[in-house]
Amino acid sequence: MRKMRSRTVQPARRFETVLIANRGEIAVRIQRACRELGLATVTVCSEADRDAAYGKASDMSLCIGPSSAAKSYLNQDALLLAARLSEAGAVHPGYGFLSENAAFAAAVEEAGLVFIGPEPSSIATMGDKISAKSAMMAAGVPCVPGPDKELPNDPAVIDQIAAQIGYPVIVKAAGGGGGRGMRVVPNADALQETVALTREEARKAFGSSSLYMEKFLQRPRHVEIQVLCDNHGNAVWLGHRDCSMQRRHQKVAEEAPAPGIPRQTIAPVGAACVEACRQIGYRGAGTFEFLYENGAFYFIEMNTRLQVEHPVTEMTSGFDIVQAQIKVAQGEVLEISQDEVECEGHSIECRINAEDPVSFMPSAGIITALDLPSGPGIRVDTHIHAGYKVSPHYDSLIAKLIVHGATRAEAMAKMRDVLARIRLDGISTNIPLLRALFEDDAFIRGETDIHYLEQWLKQRSAA
Amino acid sequence: MSDVDFSDPATIALLTSALEAAGVDGVEIEQPASGLRILLAKGSRPFVSGGSKPGGRAATMVIRAPMAGRFWVHHPSWPATARNYPRPVTRMDVLGFIRVGPILLPLRTAVSGRVEKCVAEHDAMVGFGDSLFEIEPHS
Image 1 (cartoon, chains in turn red, orange):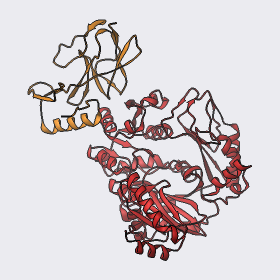
Image 2 (image 1 turned 120 degrees about the vertical axis):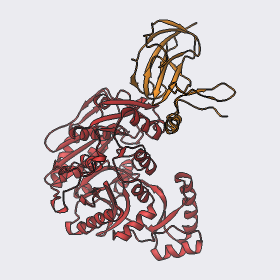
Image 3 (image 1 turned 180 degrees about the vertical axis):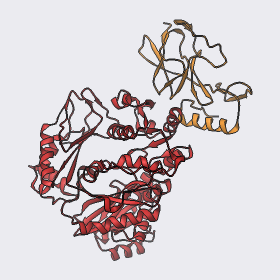
Image 4 (image 1 turned 60 degrees about the vertical axis):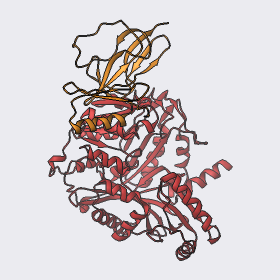
């Protein structure tokens, strides 16, 4: 991995111990980065994760609550108490759970600890989709057609906005995300009822009935840009990823770079993302998510945290994103310039989920046998082992298979080989599904959009 | 007055912050059925009392930590002599404490019987649900 040059300019932010406020494979990943930087780690766990091997490998492990995530990994007071007891100097939130909770980030900082992530105000700005879109438009980041303002209550004005955008449109909750709180409106007849339904759903689910409206793109791809920023106005983008292979808005496989997008097309968008980061004073790692259709990019949201799929960018850029997050949090200067960012080859990640490959029902139980492939250009990020008990309490992601090849074809072939060789017994997983998917011609050609997998699954079940 | 859950980290965090900010030397909180009584005890170490959480098998009950903290087998004002086990206990006896900053959370037994052993070391960092004592209840 290429290293950031170490130059401490904010010694007050130095810390020796990092509390990892997460679980599973990302806890292991953060633990590895800390260890490589010479930092001690504190892992926290729920009762369900009490026997996790990564807990025993940390310098201190504390059980903070019952198995329910709400009473453990989402319990801010329990996490802060663990940080206090363990005398940790920083908190890494990983992804999910409290990683994009501005109040938690603020509480960490107020407790005198370093939050390894952006400023709470950045999280709050990007958490509200309207303010995020407004900030992106101001920075010149291309956005989906539609006003960067909250939808008013006046039905006549709503009609007018939809007509100006052009049907079909999509109505979204300002506080939503991850595919929740949004509805497509095919024509004017369905508009008012759809707005009313979405408004009520948004109020119940996100505590705010604020909505906005955009053009609905029919067959877009999901392309995202990884950024990294320090506290000193330096920012770079580390290439792009394609995460179009999704089911119910959950990514199944990701790759870097996004196939078929020329450098000259993506480079101005990456530069605009970097400029947006500078304008909002962004700190740490972040991801700009776009829909890509007919050669144009449309910003949808920014994730103010580490992404599950960050390894494919690490594999192509040679840059350790988690280590960089930690160094930035310690006040170090990001001295790598955009000119020094060189992405090479092609990387693909498959998410191994503990779920039935047909019904997608979660599969809990004990892993009776596990044989993970290894070799050049193969990386497996996981916390599981033979004898590990998969809990029904959490997300079904149990491992990430990541491969790197000189070309996309080589990476695809390597992933097929890895999927053929992996052995995981005792529970059901989506490995059979992934094996079939990597034999699909359209996927092999790199011609799939965000709806492709769901259509492919429908065809399979009908056959 | 509503019941206060002293095994809730939010409660302990709030109390810890308030006590430290106020520079209070010692607080003893009693929680009779009728309400909450607060006694300031300047000069002694502050502590907060609450309930314990028994669990485990029917024959032997295991007293577990209700939250993360330092396990203290005796009160700081008691002689620092090791307790002998087994020893008899009656319901609501204090078996030990969880210490979080200035707060001591007493661990009370919900049953009468005999403490067979203490399975955690004094001043050890313990987590939620960690085993602390094994009790053989009276039949």
